[in-house]
Image (cartoon, rainbow, N blue to C red):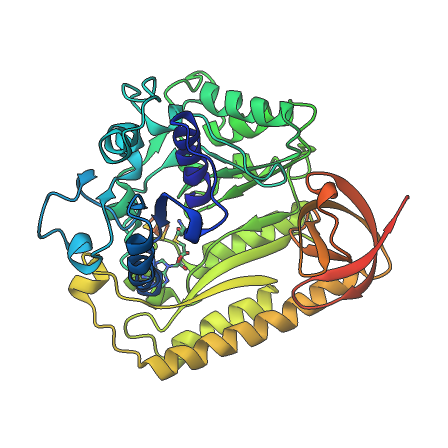
Length: 433
Ligand code: SAH
Ligand code: SF4
């Protein structure tokens, strides 16, 4: 979501006449689009604040702004003394809530005396600002913003506010424009995509609006792959599951964040589903696509998590063969329900140890999963070329690398015969077949 938001900020800056800098050192303007899901992410931003001080001494024109989830109140210049972010980061000139991106031209008019982007000011939603696609192989299209769930550990509902869905017409229009520019894969994003509720949904159609949207995107002939993030297990509907195997664009991979394999922990997290529900969803998906890749998120060391409760998460990954896990050590976020009502009482050393154990078990599963591709020729959509390799993904969401940097292939398909299947990645050679 932040990646996609940055592409809208880029549109405003380009309209104002700014051009991309090579790095911090030659920039006149730096905007940090922040994440505050974990304390560590915020600390990194505060660290950058220190780094910017000497840059400002060298370049008096340099202005620094902050947006994203760290900014939860007021948009504006450095006027409101006492605001925490200005107090901790002396180099910051302005902040704005991402929802109030429409006010950025006004701020920059005052700071840099730039003119333009007047058509942005009166828009009622920042989603009406078109995106500037930065990588045609990785197009992210938001379907909604905000969250109504209030999982007890999570800051997102406070940072992004309540759920607001974009109209289906707007999502389709943006998708079609991206497809015309050459996008073959579309990533639909939102905190909880299955509760997508656009104002222009057909009230007579009984199918979930998100399923309707997936059908409409499937009808765009040049779009081959659709992915979506994230899905809350309580909301994944049978309507959407039924589309796997039916629509040609549904990819054999689903990111389904479970957070914990223990019902008692899920209850304390206010996740409102049980592990049995998660298992049932995985079984339904695999009944439709047997080799379906399932990835998930796990938080280790949540308030009061015992060794036994942790082992329930460990066993879930192992038994269900979840082949990719984004593991996080619980990080208390001020203002959340857990920070107010529960104790962050699992020692850091224990969190680190559980993090390592979940990572180890996942590596084993992933290594085993990847063996199925050995000797096969797979279709790779190339995303990037760096560190001596060209990288891309297959429909199952596995990275494939080829020796040699070939940036000219970005956004294109290549067929690759897999020679090596490692834990994190597959490797092979390009072939014609
Ligand atoms: N909407 C998604 C999650 C978005 S936040 C969902 O419902 O699953 C992305 C991930 O960050 C979460 O899945 C969780 O694993 C992690 N996360 C969120 N808050 C956290 C916290 N306070 N401490 C540690 N990890 C956290
Ligand atoms: Fe956070 Fe829960 Fe909403 Fe996901 S569903 S964004 S974890 S509150």
